[in-house]
Length: 142
Image 1 (cartoon, rainbow, N blue to C red):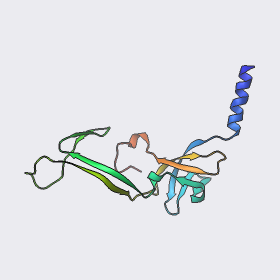
Image 2: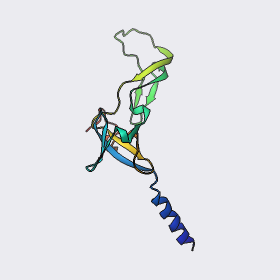
Image 3: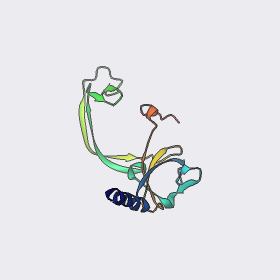
Image 4: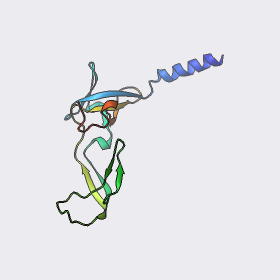
């Protein structure tokens, strides 16, 4: 009896068409077009796009400490001030409340993760992604 009730509950949830994650590729930047598969191309009227994937501004602080080691995931690099003055003293500074403007948005060829909203008529472009073997390459291999 319990198993039958559980099966009915699972079928009821599946019937409501809950949120799904799907992959797509940007085929056109402006106006935006994302191909999910050969028979499904999504255009801007079906898409909401996360702000970090658009042209936007952020207020940031920047800190520099000469010779500090920075862990980058696949390697460690030393923080340094790139200057032609070889006799420059060790430097340290902090800039607070700077406006950082992110100019680039989604581009043709970007691989994206989409969230299909319940009902399947609206999608949120959640983030870009890379294939596992390309996570440490820059620029991204196509």
